[in-house]
Image (cartoon, rainbow, N blue to C red):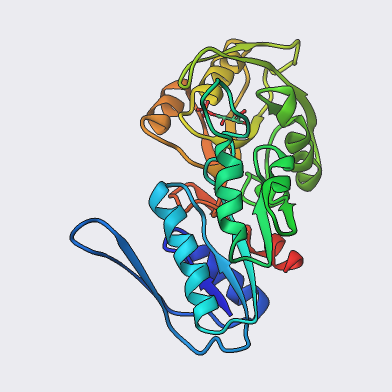
Length: 283
Ligand code: R5P
């Protein structure tokens, strides 16, 4: 039985279709004081349940804990939790004295009622070690090749920093043609980045800029500006998690992006492809 979180409706339905597992009904209510309450429908006694819930907000984190507890309460035999997008994963260290390791805190909480956890493209793979139950990363990046235009001209798959190079290589391999390269990124603040260009030859070529997350859009809009200076032809953005917070879309539009392609780990207008087949292989 697939049990959907409120932020993972389309992905849960796609996963049910992909696996043939039944999709549980669930409702999500809010009391006047702001507290949430979930209700999971169906007979879960002795069932293996797969709770699919992205946690982009604090409320989604609490909702996931409630969903896990609800299915346990209903007698589920095994609980596999799929985190299509794991919120707080980028807070993977105590950056200053007095601060928590937030990714560890949420991982421990999730572990209290899960038997196994799958995390789709965590920012760092080792975040999975923070769980107290077996937890594995799932790489949905190959799915990003599917929505890309079939007619990319001499494509360059470009990572905005070295950490994202393997993602760019994965998308290039899945696309079946093109070169890869990376820029060097220096983060100045939560919303400002500086891109130090490599000698990547972009003139006249279609470029696909690949990253795990597009959040404020600062990284990608800086990268696109450099590419436009180098007379790149079309510049597309491909990311696993289209967070697209605040003015990200207008920043990217002003930078001259030709298209934004994300997966449905977060449900956005830009979620051009489902991660369901990749997750299904790992269930
Ligand atoms: C961080 O290292 C990630 O890989 C992304 O590059 C980052 O989250 C993008 O953030 P933003 O869109 O705010 O620049």
